Length: 449
Figure 1 (tube, rainbow, N blue to C red):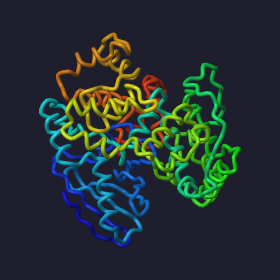
Figure 2 (tube, rainbow, N blue to C red; figure 1 turned 180 degrees about the vertical axis):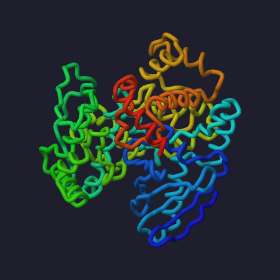
Figure 3 (cartoon, helix red, strand yellow; figure 1 turned 90 degrees about the vertical axis):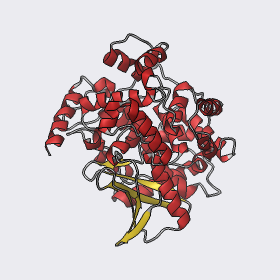
Figure 4 (spheres, helix red, strand yellow; figure 1 turned 135 degrees about the vertical axis):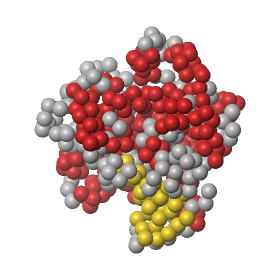
């Protein structure tokens, strides 16, 4: 599928043809929580996906849109009159990966639609993912053992760190080292209350307040070492130039609680590369981005890629045919990585295109109990999953995920129409809360527009 290019003013437009007549950009993007995580930004008004993309010659910010379902995908690159052939191919490959546009993906969708009539009628089945496997792998780490607002906060913190990392990581002075504290996966101590002045009493949960506090604190957190101070100074300088204000002021200005929670979604960097993260001390990264024990795992992953011990491209080449043997081979390689347990590995393999296994966690157990009325726990979840979704093999995950995704959508509103400020509120704990009721009112308002 070759792309066509044309120039409109100072914006380069690239078109990617789609063969699947059911392909709908909105449904392809707003299909998994990954689309809500920085540096992705979905604009409900224009139905476009906006984010930075890294090319061989440097980074660009792109807008991805579609005039109507089954029409070509339009990739807009502002400020670029032309791209080299190498850059253009890299850009289009990454967009195709995110949207799962390929002959093989089309074949998978067709097979799934043959056994899942509801998905066929609604044009569902493509699950959004990142431009690179490395970004998917890190985000799967962020999804594990964590509340959703915190996951969003950590992803954004990594992207905010990327700009100063990009400027500083090539410097000989850049070797941030901080003492390694004893790693603890969970803090058993009672959570400290975070007080934020709200314009209304809309937010009741401490979870979101904690996230807001993290987002304020992690940008202004001072570092003990001179190199780390260099990063934070660069971050402050960048934020000043973007917003004309200090980081703390601009972040506070972005936190609006009258109609929900609105975090600032502009002026973030791209997702960090393995090369950028491999230079960091894990303790510094944990403190700077509030990653906790995940920082050590992320740095270890980055180093394994930089050292050549793990080659993401070769891993993806093993996916050809999506056989069970290739699944087992990739799963075995992932299991050797620090922190990649069964849940994280299953999520990574789903991102790679394997759909026969459902990553089971407490959310899976909750859904099976609540939606299907089956009593199960984390140990018996796979047995229940097979009993419910086994008839959709080898696409059990797609059947489960579409069911779960629509269940949330019925309670919180159409994903593609929700403003980004509402994303931290879409949690299982808020399903029966005042927040959910307020979001349903917002849903009706959006549908009437």
